[in-house]
Every structure is written in structure tokens, then in C-alpha cells.
Length: 470
Image 1 (cartoon, rainbow, N blue to C red):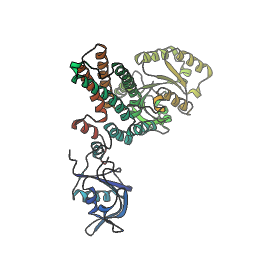
Image 2: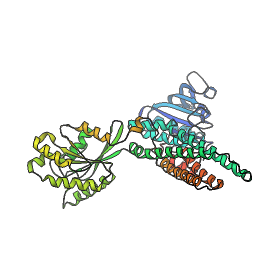
Image 3: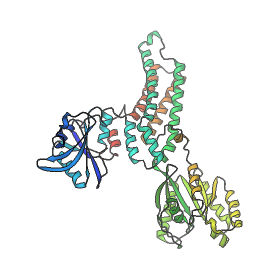
């Protein structure tokens, strides 16, 4: 890793805007920028205190690039732990590129993806889980994912892991000390206290592992499939939920040939709605492909909305038993998925039809039934509230640690397995040297989360997913 050179990158999004920020970090950051910065008050950039801002111009010979504000952050009191200079210039893409190219010609190189945060980690400004939370914070697009990323970036998750690791490390040291006095048959580590600690660690690890089910859907959005026969109002429902004309609505059955997806935030949580092709027997090749995709999306969905055209049931006297059979098949195939039977066009049916539908649908075990009108918006808010009820957000409301990272989840499972091996070993009376090996394995998995144990390949995989400039 080239940590002695000076790196540069655009820290704001590419494109034209009011201003842009160009970030420079490294041993020569201040002197390199100082060579081309002319303060309007004649101040020397290299002689300024940390956390100061100067107004001036970026100049090369007789050429002036732009009037800028230059912010100075001296090591170790900077984001990266190195000397950092941030140049706030006007947001013209031409100006941005001209300034960056000027410094590339004069000792800087372009930063790799996530290299500023990588240097922050390597210089001890962040641990690895906090560094990963930076990327999650940038990617957060709803209140819940933002809240989790902020909590993790402040060290909530890593502090919990470090506390467990320190306690376990203390006992590991005492047990290994016993090995040095094996002939004297002394016991430094109180076995009862150690068993209590292992029990507590198991409880915490299981809670963190269980939180991943919630954390994963919060981070990636909760997929909701809208399914049903053709022309029951699936696309109208999608438009009503999104409050925009996202899907084509037509009286012609089979209009939706492919899946249409879009995401909205409900109660601070991201829900990804998938409008699917209507399910029916068809000889149309293209429509048939769309129907196959419908079943693929049902497999991927966390929640299924099965739409029923109540007006058609009333007008044609469709046998309600067939509808009940279809829903039972769906529920039997996906017993773990919440399924809501949405009776659409509720505003166009009489009380008798509504009562009959309610009775027959209520007989399907585990099915939630709701009446609405996608066209008028009646029942849409109630549907949103019902969707929120399917997500256990208690841990989020209580500001508990929630795991959202697959790498952390994998390390926690391995740490739990190692702790259970230690507990089984103690119950079976295994020797201290074997017990010590299992404890060390658990400690290693804790260390993988915070970055106390890592390698270049792991760091490369993590930081490659960052944006350049962060």
C-alpha cells in the first residue's frame, strides 16, 4: 500500500454545481497546494494553524484557475489522520478538472476508491466496522438505514464487540498463565465466573445475529410483490403507492409483460414494490415469459400482495371457492411469507359481495384481508401501516445495535460457534491448552469485525465498493 504519497480526488458528486470540493491528503498535501495557492491577504499556507480557512486563488504562473476557499487540517486531527487540504472551488466541471490535473502534474496521484477512509482506518481514526459504516451512511436513502449507519459509525457496534473481546481476552491470558505453572496445579481463572461470561457472550452474539434479519431488509429495502390475475388493478395500485404514474394502466388484459420495480419510504423504512405480469393461462410467448418472472419475484419477495378485482367477482359471479383455493395454494407454497389479500375496487361493490368476500377469504388460515380502491386511494394508508406491522422495528426504536453487514454476520456466527466449543470443552473438562486454542479462535473472529485482524485482500474487497473521494 502506497501510504507515503499524496492523493487527490473530487469529494463532491461529479457534474456541474454551485461549488465543488477537491480533497488532498498526504505528507506533502499542504506544501503541494501551497505552491499554487495565492492568499488574498498574502498568507503562506504552510505556516497556518490546523482547522483554518483561507480565501485566495489557485494560480499557475500567469494563469488563474479560480477563486477558492482552502481548508487546512493538520495530522493527526484530520479525517485520514494525515495532513489534509480541501479546496472549495466553483462547480464548473472544467474548473474541477483543471485544478485536479494541475496537482496531478505536480506530485499528487488520483486516489483509489475509498482510499481516504482506508487511510483513516490504517491510521487508527476509525476501526473497520466504522469505516464500512461510512459507505452505508452515504448509501442510506431512508430514516432507518441512516439511523443504523450513524449508530455504527459512532462506534455502537464496535464498542459492544470490543467490550466482549476484552473480557474474553482477560480470561484467555489467565488460562494461558496457568499453563506456565502447570506443575504447581494452580488456577488463576475462576471457572464459575468464566462460565457466566461465556453465557453472557452467547446471549449477546445471538441477539446480534438475530438482528441481521431486520438489518438486512432495512439496508436493502423490503421487497413486496404485487400479484394477481390480469386487469385487477396491480399497476394502478403501484402508481397509488408511489404517488406517480410509474406503470402503464390500461383496460387491456396483459398490459404488464415485465416486472416494474420502484422503492418508497414508509415510516422511515424502504419498501421495494414489484408490479408483476398477471397470472393466467396464455399462449402469448412474451406474456408467458412475464408470468414466469412473476413467480421468480414471488420467491424473492418478503411480502406478497394478492390483488382481487371485487367488481368482476360481483358482475360475473366468479366462484369464490376457486379464489379461496388459489390463495390456499399460495399460502401453502410460501408459509413463511406474509400474504395480504387486497380486495380492489371496494368502492364499486355492494355490501353483500363485500360480506361474501370477507367470509370466504377469512377462512384461509394465515391470510390478511384488506379492502381498498387503488383508483381513489381509499385504504392505501391502511395498507402502508399493515406493511409496517410485518417488520419488527422494536430494536430500531430502542436504539439497539442492528447488524446489516454480511461480513459481520458471518464473523458473529463463527465467533458463536467458537464460544460454544469453549463452553463444551469446559463442561467436558478439557485441558487448558486446548481451551486456550478455542478461545483464541473466538477472539480472532471478534477481531475480524473491528479490523484488529485483517489482510490486504479483505481491505481491498471492502474499500473497492466505496466511491472515489471518500
